[in-house]
Length: 282
Length: 248
Image (cartoon, rainbow over all chains, first blue to last red; front, top):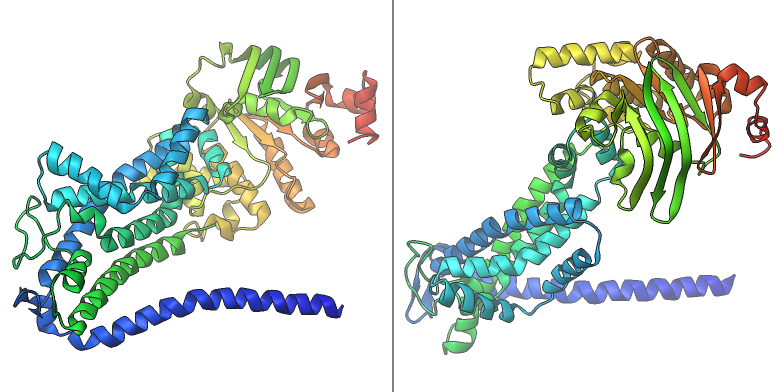
């Protein structure tokens, strides 16, 4: 009896310790970034172009650039990813080929992002001649987040109970009507979760945009999708390692803005998801 | 008139031989009860009638199955399922309101006018003896109803499409005796206008509502006869044993 209680206490201790080990670093990162970055945040920092070789002024072009890139990536990846997920979960037969395809897609999300960057450089920048541009960068980021969106959307579609499909079909609805009216509406919260994960990843990655869009220093806003643009993660890299004597608070301020931007985009998706969940009736 | 006609029907799910050489005719406007222990093939037989078995990836069939004198495989599948409705074992409302659940099938077949839909929903709910209980809250989620009400909602949903045949797959297995009595009452009234095939685990229910009763065992149709005959003087001793509860 005493033995059982002791092993329970030990198990609890280790489980709690593991959780603590995860929470503390995350908490510390957030605290340090806010502490060191907050003094840099003011209206000029958020709305002005970088000045004096990025040692003063603001980061507005980088904020706008990241926003465009993420938006472009989602516009490209969400519809294609969703359609592919519908095909794979609802129409594709369960055979070896399709299992390999599904496995390949899952594994693609583990490919290092610099590989996607090289791929984007070869395909969009050079072959399609889009040049280093927002279009090339968005497409590259889009391809990078496609596996995440496909995998999570597929799981969301497959978690809709089979019985709902049978009921709909038994009433004489076609397969597409069943997907459109029964399966999709009930899978939306899960699909949005995938989109949230994709958003965060697209906003934060440096390597894929390095070769395809990011400008070292561009003190103006992009005028079209064929322009180069600055982006927050790359800008952070530049002012941290490439430009000497940049004030620490500017670096942490940039990190804080990037963090807030990702959080803000996630929040929007979470609110949409929450509203759909509330409507869910089972 | 013969509604369904199966000749030497065999079906497989992968390696499993689920129906073995079944020959059966189902008459219009009768209630055919199908009884048998679990894994006897009775549900597989039922799902043959609206081709729901074809959802199974490894489904195969041989033999002949016709509906209204037509090869069932040649009838377009949505059209067939519109004419052959189904009520499932568990109450399975769709995640929609009461109104939208009943209107669902009709909507999918292209009806858009709100007034016409309201008319159809009201008629179907009345036929399923549910109208009085839900008429003031048609907009609420179907999941707010009790189990027995949900099952009658599912019957109403099937009726709204205006089928010729209704397949019941153990419709009362999750219901209390009072709800069961209400569902059985609805079935007996529906017989006038519809052909009904009732798969049931409850032998007494088969005796109460069936005109004819079919007994399945291990994928074979053992015996098919008038219900009184099956329950008083079955000609096969396996039927006799099952009815008297010797195996189940």
